[in-house]
Image: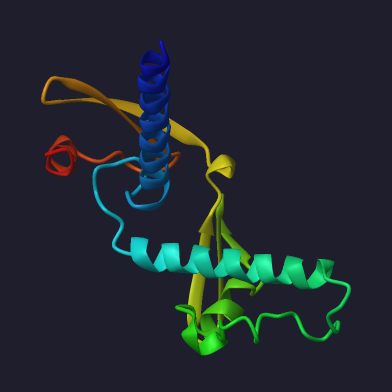
Length: 158
């Protein structure tokens, strides 16, 4: 009986790990729920790791009553600004105020670094249905824009 429970617990563990890996890949490695790989996946993961490390060290420094308030532990923790994948110009540009360009699209620039943000919830879409290789594909297109042609979609969904 112990062996059966052990097999099932291993199976549940493997399914859990597979779910976590696939969920992470969908959100970080692939572009917009498509089979295309994000060319900036490595840079994005490094930025997330750096951000996580920065927040963690800041939290530890904040919670530690024995450290000096001016010492966050970030400089002494072995991670300096030169070793991060994001330069200071990019970090400043990411914190720059954004101006509304159109409905749901915001942009900003600082130190010749351009930043844009698309807020999907603010954009009104029209949904079009295409038949590609016998499958029904639904495409959301922002109002006022032309939908892609059948040939373009066939090239995308090879």
